[in-house]
Length: 130
Image (cartoon, helix red, strand yellow):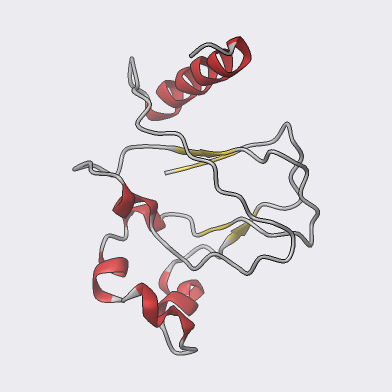
């Protein structure tokens, strides 16, 4: 609240979110920093909606790198339209993702569009997903 650059960024992201969601106003639910170092293993497939206590899939997540990430760096992969697949995490235990036959490891068969790979990314880049 006291760092003007951070405050300006928050307001800009809020304005972008209201345009993307086609609503007059939005509210920031939380901000988080996830630190992935070079060489860290992949983050298991997950659904962000399970972490938010809302009765709607209509929210956005902005991913903003704090350093440049090379094309062969720790990748961001998204499955388009997976935000509306509420059955995936309830019928397929995330702990089973380590098994080769897990539904989590066959997402390309579950969704019509292939996973989207967002690399490389620079400090000025961001991704938005719901």
